Image (cartoon, rainbow, N blue to C red; front, top):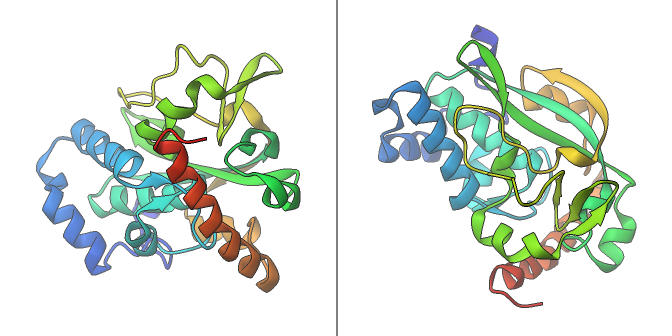
Amino acid sequence: MKRYLQATKLLDVTHPSIQHLIERQQWREYGEYETINRIYEYVRNEVKFGYNRSDDIPASEVLQDGYGQCNTKSILLMALLRGVGIPCRIHGFYIDKKMQKGALTGIVYLLAPRKIVHAWTEVYFNNEWQVLEGVIIDDTYFLQVKDRLCSYNGGYIGFGISIKDKEQISLCWRGDSTYIQSFSITHDLGYYDSPDEFFAKYNNTKGFIKKKLFYFFSKILNKRLERIREGKR
């Protein structure tokens, strides 16, 4: 399990902001279940769904931004879990970009690749690996878009969400796996010990031009997501 606890460049566990957050929240004072639950809920709701400048940014930057998407929230979640001694790994995929429609609009949606690089964190708990994909979407955002999802291929998609049954979903962690985008997975890219390994190979923002474009459009997208949270169309 040692390799699932190591700090890396992206999992900058020793960064002062990461350490201060762990101490302030007293996550080391709880049992394993409660610690995982509290860290998961913090990243899910205190770090809102949004778009950072790139997929491969350090956990401390995600925390400073205060928002993140599947890839960047996975980085922060992993850093916090490893920071309190809980093993975790990253699992990568391609997902169909149709599920992003509504969150991505206009030229941004048109320019997005047909298959988007997607990752989730898996935590080792009760002698098994459990998926924490539900961490991506905060409650405020989900409540605003839940009834705006489109029926597609036997499930519901849109606004960065892709689920089989929108009435049965629970984003809260109860000791087992949580899902929020898995219905749109097209390819399994495998397991990785660290996000550094995964994003060096698969990355939505690889290359100078892509990074610059995404950085520019992310500011527009985040303003749109805030309007959605406020109930504005």
